[in-house]
Image (cartoon, rainbow, N blue to C red; front, side):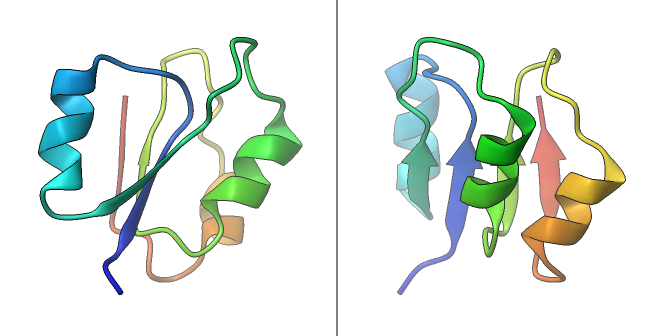
Length: 74
């Protein structure tokens, strides 16, 4: 099983294609901004997060994701 990157919004396929070459990618398909609980729940166990600037990347999110978290990008 490959490591997973969680993407909080639908982003251009070209970017996702690059991620999918090396990782499993979990993309939140909702058109509305996700609430904090949704992001925390889906982020658990992933090694990376791709968020938008309006998503709050706070200590609670990083702690909930787990010690395997290697990076957050937006």
